[in-house]
Image 1 (cartoon, helix red, strand yellow):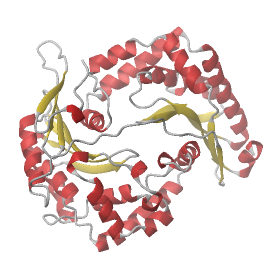
Image 2 (cartoon, one colour):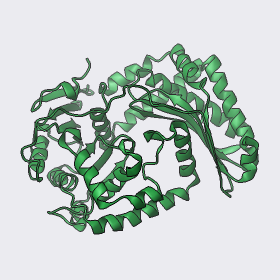
Image 3 (cartoon, helix red, strand yellow):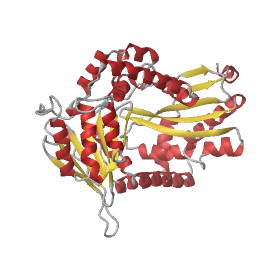
Image 4 (spheres, one colour):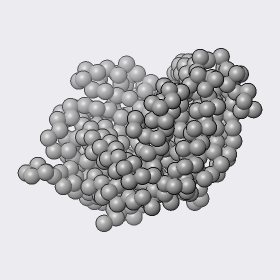
Length: 449
């Protein structure tokens, strides 16, 4: 049955979203959600037998929510929230979890930001308090803004030194153009230098509100106890003790994200030419995503895939060649990436285009369908044995509308994929005019101009 969306769940109530089937006498995991009066969601997945837990406080804001003048603000803010509160210095935030062998980190994406920790089950109260304190009560002091600005500029410089990072960013920029999805998560040197303490603090106050936050946890956690801990931590935050009653916020898509068919060439004196060649594809909650996964597997998702076998094994034209799919709430892309000697680039790109055209015209084989399903099943089940992966799954599911499927339901969807399903997705996706980004010396770029 479809899960009750958070937007339809009454404030102050608790619902069980999933009960996983266990093996034999082993009890399966259970996913529960409580929506607090201010709209803050607490969602847990209890994993019987675990002795640790992964906790994450998610906010439904990512780099795609920035205006051009705020480019990089989401990522900048992620750094700053580790720099101290009224109750803790930056040292305290690091040392308190280090002292119990815990791990504390964060990441910024295009559509959300997450502050997460992994601890032993007995240290869950400490981790909840630290994460909630830093996310709700950051001081964002001017001196820390200036200090962290330098750190982020170093991060951008490191990113620019990596050809693979640069060509992938160039591909996304070429595909989505000047739209929010086309901009770099870190921002640019110019935009980061221009950001002021007032701008970042204002962004924090507008975006980090209870109705846009999700506290997710997986492992040896008790849902009722965790709700109590989170509620207590938020009540200790200034202005959040008596939150305004408001419905939860989720990200929705009124229409597909606009895309372009473009070519971006970046000249750099590298030993290898790096490239990304791709086309728009299905959104995150599109029911055809399972067929897309099988298609990706057949094209370049493993060592038995068409591109790996043809380009590396049979012809020895490249060491690295693979395909991947990236999905957002309103669209995504399927792309091929690789690196080769500059004088081999034209041949490699021609083979990629030929193989994509063959799949678009004729689909995949029965054997490729079998292997593709096997890859999806294996990665799904083995990935879900980790509490971090389960916490990420339930956290993301709260921020993007759609059903949260159990592992068994997902496996059923994978098994149901047919050759016709894959062929239909291939025809719709691979017949589009592709976008290409290449980084390398002029000798590699010249034939493409």
